Length: 107
View (cartoon, rainbow, N blue to C red):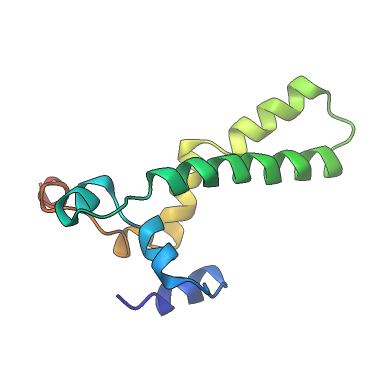
């Protein structure tokens, strides 16, 4: 798969396309092809995203108390926010899903 359109959309060119493919590989597809899914990378990515957003909030919103910072971070790094970013960049066009998952999407 050519990831150029995705890279243009997000403004970043990936050096390791194999790692990018793994990041976009749903568990259903990985199971069918006997390859590694995106789950471990998702775990790592969640941690990195939390760190970066925490650092940004801490640096740019020094007037907030710890509890307020936590609420802001939770709002920014929540499922709905991440879904909106994925939808904006059409990530679903690039995700590798298994046959069963693809059939569920069509219904």
